[in-house]
Length: 473
Ligand code: AMP
Ligand code: ZN
Image 1 (cartoon, rainbow, N blue to C red):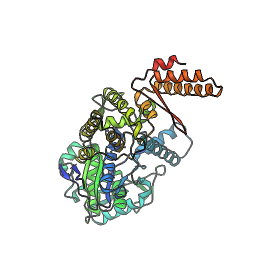
Image 2 (cartoon, rainbow, N blue to C red):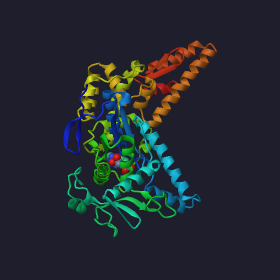
Image 3 (tube, protein in one colour):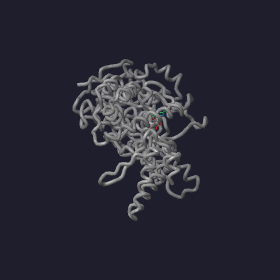
Image 4 (cartoon, rainbow, N blue to C red):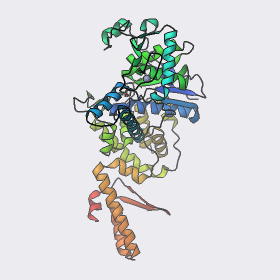
């Protein structure tokens, strides 16, 4: 069996991955707070952990991996978005607006992440479906002396957990100095964090032993991981921005509520995405969503390949130059994929070897390039498919997709479709000379037309010449 090595943030070492149960390998990844479209950075953990999911399924078996990624659908940002809509004159109740917003956002998220070739996780729990488990865990933490109630809030007492800060390797004093912690009069220690908070009549809330309220963000993940994966599981992932305080708090809650378990044994964190060397931010004007790119007709698979060029543990830069490079490379390759659409896409040993080495996706791209350079097209096709860069669709679409800019792509498809229709019409009226003329013109322009029993497909040769095609009209 392939040996997988992963860099474990918890031990700061690359370790051999040994699952607790090879027949049920379990991974939890923190999912999005669903109040708005996913920005490009949000796609990074999705793609990184999708590659890991694919690798684990390959090594342990498709049915042997449980991947849980939650939706945080109760959060003050969601409430604020709904409130803003109400203030702007929407007559509906806050509850209806919140529900509409979260449903809509989950739909967008699915569409956008499908487009970048990510498989859906095994389970995608919504926080609001697991409030009972969060209340029970909170009550248990109070009983065990790790949490206390104050002014309708329940707070976790960080002093009650000696290992607090171990994941990020910081002392509580350092954390207080460095963090933006909410100072509140009811906190015994400024680092104590909220497990439960009160809701007013207008804010979503559930009954609890501490009055009507809602859970804090951190307890959501601890409760859902416990319910769906148990007290001990294999991998926990998320962006490095979540390491502190979110993941420290998850560990504190879970370790104290379930001292019998180990919670996650391997912690993986992806570094952040930047744009043209700068932090992505609304104020810098370089903030964009996955949907913005898709709407510019940038194929999702191309976005995916740009992401894979950088190792997950390194900051990644999204640049137009990289995007162009990938576009050219995929165009060359996609033309070769025509012969492999029917195949399953078994990955090469070389690919699995580099992925098993702490998900070395930049090396995976090197493997793809060497397949191409050495004429191993069958393996190139299999590896592109395994990496989720190509989904096996028909080659004419692939080459069209990768080759040209959005408006050009549409123009080319329309032109070719129109000319193919004219061939049909000419044949119908027995004007074979005209049909042959157009057909020869298409060939001269680098459009390779193949007629099978059921359909006519076409692909663009590298010699494709748009001017010649336009001249045929
Ligand atoms: P959020 O909805 O903000 O909690 O983020 C969802 C996921 O996206 C988390 O795993 C974050 O760590 C990750 N994330 C947010 N911003 C970025 C970024 N710029 N680059 C990479 N990952 C990010
Ligand atoms: Zn989480």
